[in-house]
Image (cartoon, rainbow, N blue to C red; front, side, top):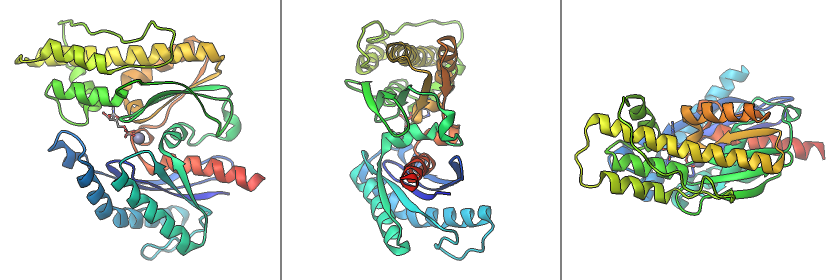
Length: 334
Ligand code: KG4
Ligand code: ZN
């Protein structure tokens, strides 16, 4: 039974998780310390501040995670020592903010050395994807799958012919979808991170209707472009003192425009590849409208739909541990 200790520090979340299971990966512990309140003061992440906070948070988060795992597994615990066997330490190596990443890299490599187990570096985007496979046995997924990864740093469509196989189909040519949420929220005077605050403001929208474009939606390419959407909003709201109803109307239209493009392109990719499964992953996968709309569209297209639990959408080590579990299982079998 592979047991993985996972570490994720690519941006402004410090996270340590334990993933284990005989026939399927279960995330038994997923400790996340978020810096969101700190970055709300500056309206976004300041890399040096994020790195310093990572260093402050790492050891307490590690200690909590190990203690929580000891308790879950029913073993006695003392300090930052695991009292259960660990097969590998898996950590996010790239991409991300260098100063933040280094805290996780150093921690994971040191623990692996101390415990005499392998340390394995993984790609952050592949970690996000595996958040959607938590709790699923390898044979539960029907291939090929098309995966939409939407986060603050990435907007990509991948084809997966099987586990741990990735072929890039398309990606954003400029801003990522999460970045669009964040920048558009700022234009509307809403707080960081923009995704949740735009979603909350959209809920308040009433009769008023406003319009934004759906960039590249009808082009055959599987690439995305979101910077024009942000600029379109800028021209509409610049220099104006928006009332609450106007902010809500623009928030609803911003969210709808992003979701329309993401869902349209994902369905196009699924049709082109003959996908049996559509997977949604990344921080923006926490968006309820996107979850519902893509699930409906996937079902209508005859595809199975998979998405992560809310706790495995925005950056967390649980998703990294699930990827590590699948890698470890492959190694154990060979
Ligand atoms: O995956 P993530 O935590 O970090 C990166 O790898 O970038 O994603 C963060 C992004 C932010 O842009 C945030 O605005 C967005 O995910 N996000 C959301 C929601 N929750 C987080 N976007 C839309 N709706 C949400 N509910
Ligand atoms: Zn991420």
